[in-house]
Image (cartoon, rainbow over the protein chains, first blue to last red):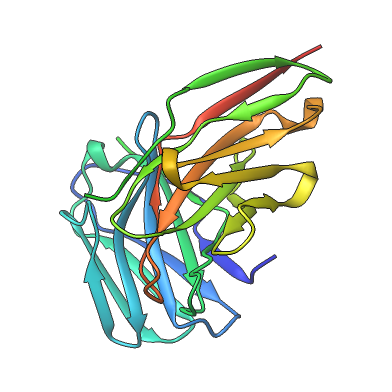
Length: 113
Length: 114
């Protein structure tokens, strides 16, 4: 299994509070991604990173920001959590070589009440 | 626009019966194609992938998939389903640009009846 650790794995937070999810990898892969998974929508890309301090938006980036200060860590921040951001969040990594296999973490369950 | 369609939201198969999960994609060039499986409460595990060459791809857990360019399809098959195969299955497409994120279908939930 790819060395990906997500924290926290489960969190309940109140509307309007900031939340940060952390993804840590031990594979030294260049690319890291944050997806959210919702029933009926599959997985949708929020943001991704192609190197330290290099990030870009995905399909559903509104309300989210990311940072990558080290190769191994990719942080996802909800500046002011809303109920619509209740979801399962998956971090993924890729070496970035042709073929682009992406490996997933175990997920972080976030509930905004 | 790039997209992936999994027409079946939920499929029930008897244990020991054969399985086929459908996947259709829309992409301008030959894509890279993937199947992932997700057990409840778990992350996604790669079953198999197609890059080029032989259009019939073998994966883990006895699964295989066939790329059909003329039909823009990449259907997943298994000759005999086991109860442990009950899970959600995702088809994904990726362009041949290193690092670009995959685009996922909405998934098919497989139930296995005894």
